Amino acid sequence: MIILELQIRFSGGSGSLVAESKYAETTFFKAVLIAHIIGAVLTFLIWGFTIFNSNRKWKGSEIFAGKLHVNHKKLGYITIAGQVYTSVSALMVCTMAFFL
Image (cartoon, rainbow, N blue to C red; front, side, top):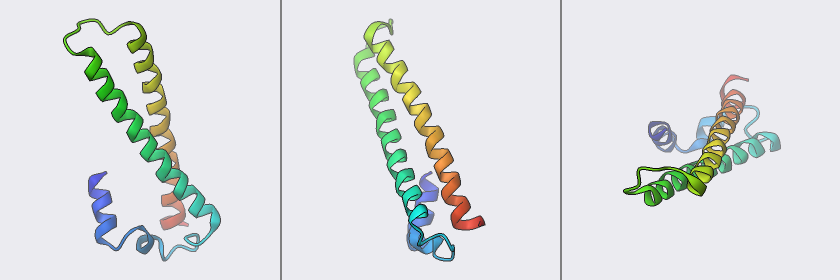
């Protein structure tokens, strides 16, 4: 992901990469792109929160149970759903930008 982001930045930003696409200026493409970015950022933040919160509360404990376990499991499912959403929306953006 870091390599992709660097490639995007060094090539002049995402706008220069999709400039040749006939969909680049459409409202639908922009909406999908914005939804993809928001979904990806939120998923990353939830994932990070889950990891750091669990690590902080679990320190030294050999038991991962109770409310922490329930919250960790819920956030895990939300993160997985967010990753699937991000993947599907990235496929849509990529298809419209480079293949159609």
